[in-house]
Image 1: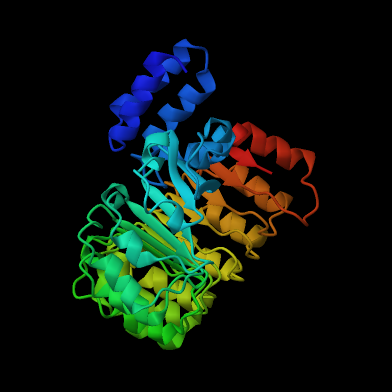
Image 2 (image 1 turned 30 degrees about the vertical axis):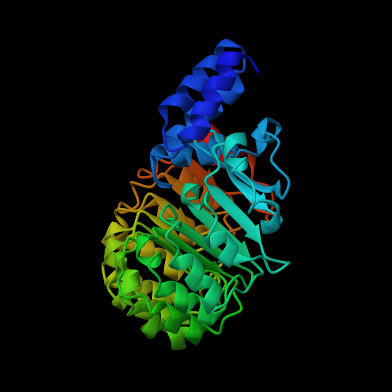
Length: 420
């Protein structure tokens, strides 16, 4: 690395929130012939400013999916100090953003060398060996961290309170707990902490906490705060927990809610639709929640979907009747992304989508493994309303290959924006 590169890279590490040095770095390496990496940096900087349902993001998802995760840039990962590893890395705005922590003992006494190796702002802490969260809470370099992820540790109230009330946790705005990462008591202590109202994103996935206790723990939050994104995926939440959950003030300021893979059923989804939460939502993920036709009907009739831009109803056993409800209501007029993959949509459902005026604003339609054959494909390809699609997924693992006429019609209408 030449001296200009080195100096600019240090500037990026020193000011990780700034885009200007990143874009200058892209210009510099482009002059050296590294067009691919320069383009990657610029694309990620632009994507960081775009919602997942914006044209830029949808188009990249179809044409350049590596722009999101950066796996193709793994060769640019620098060496990191002992105790860290790139086993679960993530790029943001063109540079490594998240690094895995293998041992807290390995870095508690260091001089923050990991932040000099890359513009790191997120740590993925694997708690298999009962890492000392209290020591992390007193780490002098903690203010440089924006996101912390924990798995396996099942941290209790003392550890959660130590982190949540640490004067050094001032920069943390995102937390994630997965695979038994925190106990019910720990989550309650976190919800009562000074950190919790500052969070903008909270992920609670696959935690072995009884659903009723999970909801009770979240109810301990003293104020809604800044939380805009919440994931409660894979937590076995049922209709019996739904009314209490959706009544929490914490959920009423959300813009992004992921309830995937919970057994909400008809009554649970109806409780969601009637709670008022939908009014502020822009992204709603209900994959594998089994809302049934009654649940879908309630979603459309409450008009709560008016502000939703991205709706995921994949893997819900929804057939043509439910799809027609979505297609024929004006409540879906604002949708830009609709995921109906792994549902028995069939040709009848595909035709309803194709004829829907309300869905004319769609940028992405996912009908993967949706039992759509030639007749449904031709309806989509000749739709007077779906000309704005930037991503149409019709890939199917078990269906018969499409006929030449259907393939030709798709290619002529959507070109590179369709996946078969």
